[in-house]
Length: 112
Image 1 (spheres, rainbow, N blue to C red):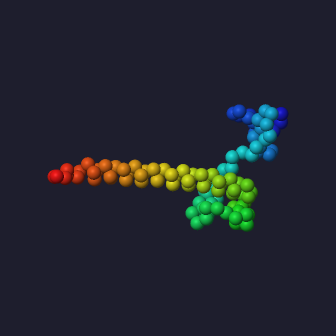
Image 2: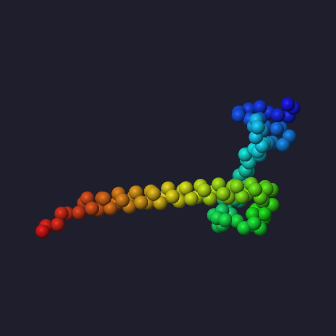
Image 3: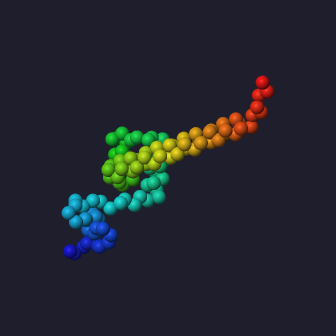
């Protein structure tokens, strides 16, 4: 099979860059974003967690990416953002519990 690079559980078609697995529809290779693209996407995400269709199109054009690539990056970034927020919340709850225990543990018993 000419033009197919072997490796891992599937092969990559050298012309299209599609990953080919036996009996499955080919899928695109993972996008390797440049540092400039990532910086732009992160800046945009900091201000705007969700993009309208028009904004997505503008970002895709500005970065020379497909709208699907921008949409997928945003979906993945929101998932990461939510996970980070959840972790911060759990850390704050744990810290508050420790502080409460520390305060309660150092109170003088009331003399009644």
